[in-house]
Each structure stands twice: as C-alpha cells, then as structure tokens.
Amino acid sequence: MTDSLDRRPGAAPPPDRGASAVAADAGTRVHLVRLVLREIRLTLREPFRISSGLVTERRILLVELTDADGVTVWAECVAGEQPNYSAETIDTAWHAIEAWVAPRVLGRAFDGPWALRPALERDFRGHPMAKAAVEMGAWALAAERAAVPLARLLGGTQRAIPTGISLGIQAHPDLLVDRARAAQAAGYRKIKLKIQPGADVAYVAAVRAAVGPGVALMADANSAYTIDDAEHLARLDEFGLTMIEQPLGRDDLVQHAALQRRLRTPLCLDESITDADRARDMLALGSGRIVNIKPGRVGGFASSVAIHDVCQAAGVPVWAGGMLESGVGRAYNVALASLPGFTMPGDLSPSARYWARDVVTPEWTMSADGLVTVPLERPGLGVAVDVDRIDDLTVRTQQLDAPQSAPQSAPQSAPAGAPVPSP
Ligand SMILES: [Mg+2]
Image 1 (spheres, rainbow, N blue to C red):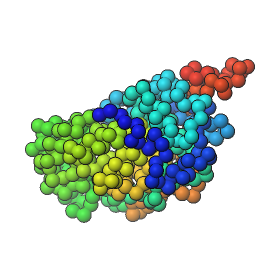
Image 2 (tube, rainbow, N blue to C red; image 1 turned 120 degrees about the vertical axis):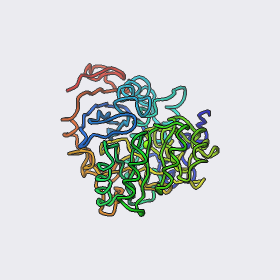
Image 3 (cartoon, rainbow, N blue to C red; image 1 turned 90 degrees about the vertical axis):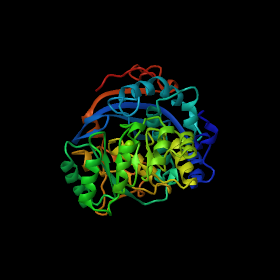
Image 4 (cartoon, rainbow, N blue to C red; image 1 turned 60 degrees about the horizontal axis):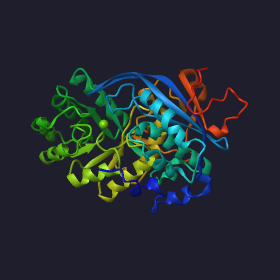
C-alpha cells in the first residue's frame, strides 16, 4: 500500500477532535532550534526474554528538544539494542536523527505538531522510531507551550488507564505461574505471557489453572510461529485468552487472516501494523480483531491517532503496548492511552517493575486496582525529568543545532550533524 499522507491527521489538524482547536492555536507552533541526543544505560531489575531475544540492560536514546523561545522537553526513542523487534536499533536511530530527521525540522517553523509527520515522511522511508522520538517530542513541546497536558492535546478523554503486565519467557511453567500470581495480587488488569515454540501451551495452561477463569490472560509470540503451526496454536483456544498477539510474520497480514479463520481467540496485531493504511488492510482482510499501538513503531503520534481513529470507527479495540521505556517514554504512552478507543488495558507497568530508580519524578505508579493515573495536573508530559540522574547515566551525547541559530563566533556551538564529545 502507498503511504497516503492526505488521509492522516498528520497532513492537517484532526477535524473532529477537541485537540484541534487547541493545537491550531499559535501557542502550539513548533519551531525547534536544538536537539540534544543522549544515550543512557538503565539495568532492568529482572532480565526480560521474548521469543526473539533477551534484554538485561537498556541502552536508551533520549532527545532533549529546544524551541526558539528556549522551551525544552524530553522525548525517548524506543529502538532497542538489537534489530530483533524491528529493523531499527538505538544506533541506526541515532544516525537517522542526526542525518535526516534533524535537518528536516531544525530551524523550521511548523504551524503545529501535526505538521511534522508529512515533513518527515516525504521521500524519507522507514526509520519510524527515529522519526517518532522527535515528532512526539514536538507534541509535548506544543502541549507545554499551550499549557495543557499532553493527553488533552492529543484528544485524550480518560483520566486513569487500566494497566496490564507483560511477563517474559521463563525456564519453567512454575516460574511463570509465580510471576502471574504476583501480578494478579498486584492488581494488574491483564496478564500477558510471552510465548514461543516449546514454551506455549503448557505454560498458558499452568497459568490459567493458577489464576482462575476470571483473569484477563493473553499471549504474545512476537512472530515466532508460521501458518504451519495453526493446529498447534488452536490448542490455545481452550484457555479463554483475551487475544493472541502477533503469532506470525512481522509484516504479514494474509497468513494472519488465514489463521484467524481457524481460531476462536481474537488475534491482535503489533509488528504488522505500521501505519493507518496497514490497519485498514488488516480490517479488509480480517487479519486480526485487536491492535496494539506503539507510537514508536508507527512513526509517532499523528500516525498513532490515525490508527486509533480507523480502529475506533470499525469498532476494533486498541491498547498501548510497551517497549521497556524509561519513565520519559512511559509519559508519552500514558498520554496516548487516554484516547477513547483505548478500551483494553495497556502495558504501562509502573517504574518499579523495571527500574531500581526511574529518570522521572514522580515515578510512575499503579493503584492497587491496576490503574495508572493520567497526569492532568501539570502541562506537557506531566512528570518532571530528573536531569541530574540522566547526567549520571549518560554515556554519549550529541548536540544538533539549527544552522541559523548557531552564533557565527561561537565555535563550541556545533552545526547540525556535528558530534560534540560527551561531558
Ligand atoms: Mg507485541
């Protein structure tokens, strides 16, 4: 399918959204003059294994955006260390932002954050996570300038988000049962089990038996199966799963449609839904009945909102996935998940699930009944970024300036694309 920008809110303010009235205001104009890229290292409290690999430490790319009036916001790129979820990695994203994203946005005045997506898509294929980091930062900057919470600028209506947990693959079903019981006791509204061939039916059966029939349980395979496994996957039907996420190829829609016809359990697509056109294709083909929206995967908020709108119009529920983000990335996911079509619990675990100490204050928490509160008390991201902590964790930094904003007589102010050594 072609990437038809004219059908996306990225091409213009969304016409039917309360946010458009806010976003169209001059207060949300986006005029970026500086991006500072930082790599921080955060060690996970517990290693996380999915079918395609193991993560023990996150290398996280944070971007500090500054506009012409000196307003700054922080954003996060969700690309991983290895190209095992998508083709992008933190290193390719760093390069893409430096080489192609920054030159398209720095020093240019956009009428609003929705205007960045067309500028980032025109003759610039791929690299959605690199694009999303800056595009989403522009939305937060616009919210900050307009003195409204990011969730409201996006059109969010929910004040608290039901939250699920994603449990990595364990060495034995009993270990998974222990974690599922703990998640149930902690109040999570949905328990997601990562599965792969050899760690699927027996694991799901053990957890279902342990937590009982009333718990929302689902499985995520991260593309570990083929259509030849259809008979095997159909065995999962007996466990009353809310959904099976992305069992087949990462860019497949046709075989997922064939599989869906053989399963009672709804399929949810993650990796395969890269933009609103792919969501429309999913609906046309019957490839799934639920969509996991990760803004990093789809190029940012304009694209995420477009996918949300397509699904909502079709009566297809969506929910917010996670990418082991720091508290910065979590703020963006929570804001997006406040949109009305996000009717299923999101993977928005509190900070303490992943980190000994997060990089935001207050840290993200979850209530005893599994709700994460949308921070509506303060504008922008709704949480403060702990810059001292980020300074301590930073292993690499690069400053990119708009050419016209770099003083001619200031050699320490690097032009766009020029590396600046780490402090
Ligand atoms: Mg997934």
